[in-house]
Image (cartoon, rainbow, N blue to C red; front, side):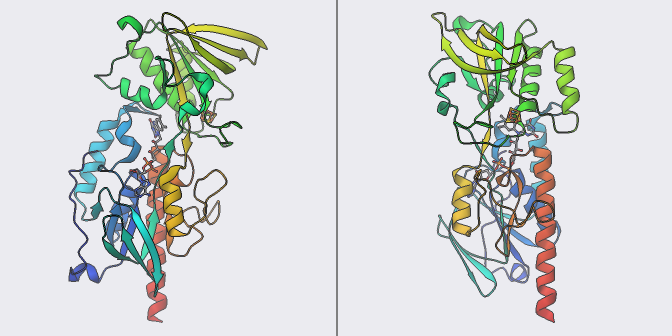
Amino acid sequence: MSASIRVIRYNPCNQEKKKMKHIVIIGGGIAGMETASALTDAGHWVTVIEKEAQIGGKLNQWSYLFPDFMPADQIKSALQEKYHERDFSILHQSEVRSLHRHNGQFNIETSDEQQLKADAIVVATGYELFDARRKEEYGYKIYDHVITSADLEQLLLPDGDLTVAAGKEPKRIAFVHCVGSRDEKSGNHYCSKVCCITGVKQAIELKKRLPEAEIYCFYMDLRMYGKHFEELYREAQEKYDIQFIRGRLSEASEKIDKSLLIKAEDTLSGRPLKMNVDLLVLLIGMEAGKGTSAAAATCGIGCEESGFLKTADAFLKSNFSQQEGIFLAGSCTAPMSINDTILHARSAAMEVDHWLKSRCDNEKM
Ligand SMILES: Cc1cc2nc3c(=O)[nH]c(=O)nc-3n(C[C@H](O)[C@H](O)[C@H](O)COP(=O)(O)OP(=O)(O)OC[C@H]3O[C@@H](n4cnc5c(N)ncnc54)[C@H](O)[C@@H]3O)c2cc1C
Ligand code: SF4
């Protein structure tokens, strides 16, 4: 998503804005931008602090989206148009350096030395991709044709090059599920929720581009939790002949022709399995990451054991942190899809608006 969205610098002298409630949102991914948009519609003044030069977060890296293969560019343009129509400020390449509460307001200092006052904060710092080098046995960044699902998104763009050794198209491709999730060794016990369906989406996309290729997905369990996900999984098998093998890969090694020998156990038949493939795709998980832990430390809010931000409860207060006036939106709280992120962001905006209004009512009494 380009930075062509109107950028209004923080202007404390603007009299009209002085009368409005000011909300600072940390993180300008889909969660942050959607919360900003909804809060602006509710009549508030909003500033988004984004550490990168661009807003949009991970969406900027994806090609086609599950569940319906909508080009990511299409949703980016739709969101861009929506944000363009709204009047809120974005501080690019900026982070919160310090945050203090004084007389019911938050005083914020940013890394680019701006001083802001806010009535409420929303943390929307998203997630980071699991670093596949930590699973050394799969050979990421050691062997040429071991890539991650995030790398594959780039190759699936219309100008992406899918050829492997000697400029040939891959004839056999394997996907490995749960790389860096549900895994004792990497310390991530949780399920990253979106990688099973990402694997199905990418396997179908590959098959459309390389109809002759054989595609195998090695999984522990398949978790098709969302609307149309199960149907897509069936379609992958019935229409695209993608093979799903219940088995965990133990290792990959590179052969002289740069193809890969993978070893696994078929846990349904109980037999060990060896397979030669031209491309190995690691379905990497989501981690809370440094951006979220930095925001948690500055805001004084808690994290779960997984590193994702702790919500005040799991049912009715999934947008509340344990600090009054500090709210949470999107995948900084748990792995989630874009659809779920948008819904979580809108509910965060509603909770902030409600909280600000009830505070005003109490002040009047
Ligand atoms: C390989 C892969 C493919 C995927 N494909 C799909 C798909 O097809 N369909 C789908 O629905 N979902 C997909 N997803 C999930 C999707 O990426 C997430 O749902 C979405 O990105 C969550 O948005 P977010 O705003 O919560 O987080 P993010 O996209 O991570 O955005 C967070 C933003 O906060 C900023 N930030 C972080 N820390 C700070 C800080 N301290 N200060 C300031 N700014 C900060 C970051 O720079 C970033 O801009 C996929 C995920 C993966 C891993
Ligand atoms: S969504 Fe699938 S691949 Fe991802 S961690 Fe969960 S079970 Fe594993």
